[in-house]
Length: 222
Image 1: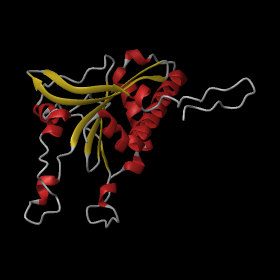
Image 2 (image 1 turned 180 degrees about the vertical axis):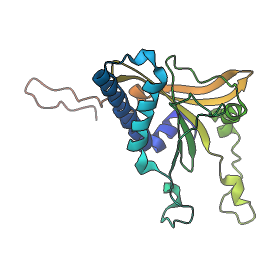
Image 3 (image 1 turned 90 degrees about the horizontal axis):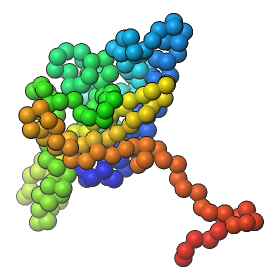
Image 4 (image 1 turned 135 degrees about the vertical axis):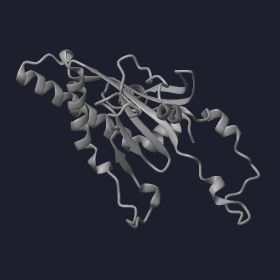
């Protein structure tokens, strides 16, 4: 449930939407700076905020639903929030986004070096604090039956997984899109359960079948 393949599989539409939103935001920031003759490196906060502002608009379809809204499938409930700019905002000021689904909490941060923000606040430490995915798998009791009326159904409702999507850009294009699952911290150092490159795992074009000399696809192995 918390392996890279399982997480990417269930969050694929959301991850693709975030990629498109960030790509659009990077383009908007580049256009604004070019129009005014500004150097983005002179004010990185403005650069990041422009990306974030456009991404917010693009991600509105993933916005919050009213709590009393009746849904035919409650697992489709989605919520989009934006990290504030306080000292305990769980992210980098002017670039943080927060998205929630029933199964996951995804924080989107800009990171040039591909590292998570240090565990320097109570909020960050709480976000990083979760068991490794392998340990969660081993902790499953085969005798537990969610359909057993004598069992507490809340026991079978796993806590949402905490994930971070790290992005970076250069020359008006995204250069990094990494999905990271933290699993605690030692002091300020964050422990990482797994770290995957979404350009490779999510956005890589599907391999095309080899073609014969006649131009028709060759048959694969039976």
